[in-house]
Every structure is written in C-alpha cells, then in structure tokens.
Image (tube, rainbow, N blue to C red; front, side):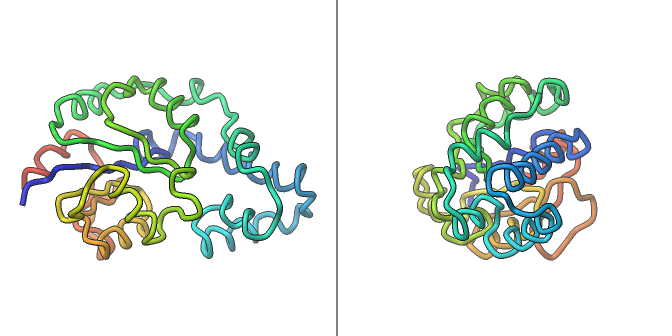
Length: 210
C-alpha cells in the first residue's frame, strides 16, 4: 500500500534536540507554574513529570488541576528567542521539498510557535497543514484520541497509508498501535516502539520507498 500522508512532529524533530530550544521552553513552563499559579518551587519538577506521564503534556495536566488560561500559558512558555538557536537545514529543506506525499505538522505545541519555528527553518512552504495542541483539545499526543483527530483533520480514513515521525517513543508506540507506520527520529538502532528509526533526514526518501 502506498503512503499518502506523513505526519511530522515539531520540537526536537524538525530541529536538533541539542539546540536547547526545548530546554528553554521547559524553563518557561516552570516559571509559569511558579509565578502565575504560585506552585512552590520544590513541587514544580515533580508535578511536571507527573503531568507529562499522566496527561501527555504539562498544559493538559494544569488544565485538569488548576484554572488556567491556555492561550496565556502557550504564549508565555513559547516566548523564547528561537532565531538565536535554530538555523535552516539545507538537507531537510531539500527532502521535504521533493517529498511528494502530503505532509502535516502534528505537535503538542501551538500553531503560533509552530509557524515561528517553520519560518526560521525556512520550511513554511512545505507543509499542507498544522495540527496543534489546540486542535486536539482536550487530548494530546500520545493519547489514542489525538491520532484519530489528526486523521480526521488531514482527511485521512486509513492510518495504514500514513506515517508518523516523532522523537518520543511513547508517541510512535501509540501511533503504531493505531495503525500508522512509525519512524522514531533521533535513534540509530531498531526499537520495539517504532517500525523504523531515523537519524539523518537524507535517508527518509529511501526509507519510505522501502
């Protein structure tokens, strides 16, 4: 069966995890919890880990346990100088430009952050759409419901015709269980939680052709 749609994660996938951007965002999440919600500093890290494991994201955890303005949270935590940390990758640009399947960003970040990242990486013209955390509300990756929503928003009816590329194992694991072909980004050795692994974007066309 041929592939019709590729879903690609944003943070730590379209740019290297070593860039430091996601670390800045995590710091801002902690700062929001401290300043806006008055959560004691010593509880922030344990709560962030608990929410990540239980709800998928800190945002969903905070929404379920505190009264917060999600738009304010998303604007605050993504207020980082990404242009100081990211730069275009010519290989990635070439791969996405020449990949003839439909391509969607599928992210637990919001659309404003996504557009900023794509602009800095010079990738804004190579995607057919963005499926962000607000479009998934009240779910998020890796909840199974999030993948069903992504399929609906992309106009897909058969997950077997779709690929999910993500840097998080539990995301590829759930996507695989939902019927997607899954690629775990940033790994070189095969793992049980994904169909394939990818560490070099130049290898993606051959991998998909196989």
